[in-house]
Image 1: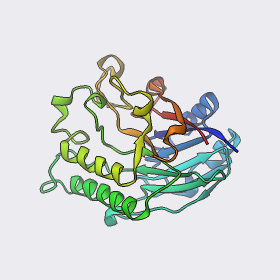
Image 2: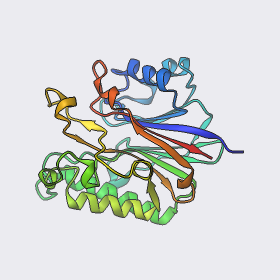
Image 3: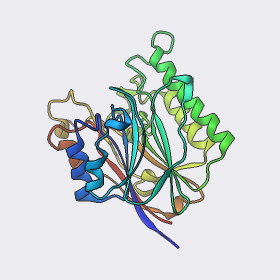
Image 4: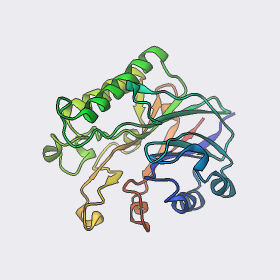
Length: 264
């Protein structure tokens, strides 16, 4: 039985502060599954009852106070399928859930990596690279199948995933070493970039800094948020889109939600 469903991923930058925005997105866009990153909340403090009232009674999550945190909200029944801690950081950065159709959804929040792209002087940059290496090694060992990976991966891999490729070559999120690490991670799990499968050409962003006075007209964006699928189900994906307008909502996250649909 084929079950068409839509999945969205959104770095919410505090699920409690922006619970009303989450509910607004759920009511207006109605994804079947919404994966949130940077929830910045212990699991028991996530306002799950609000989301249940909006038609999303199922949630699997990992949380911690004030930092990180990942959650999967679902209209469809979903069971927890584990969580990983890469680079021994002890952070709530991954949660997996499985739908009744056998699809496993991985929700990741990869470390941002700090400001300086040099692990010798910036421990956070080293942690980011090590986290990606841990993901890569796990995918090599586990060989994921019938899986979707989404999240804020904090890397814009392609030249047209950033507003100015040359200017950002030394900026954390677009450096060659990060792009190489992400490519190795992607190859290890035979993951297909669904967003770019659907939208192969042109500039595409999902994040705009709070620092820009007018983020929309300046448009100095980066595509940090991704939807991937294993190659056994990637052909079932379609209708990818970035909801840029959400970046302009009241008290927004600096990320916009990314959507894709699957006929499985």
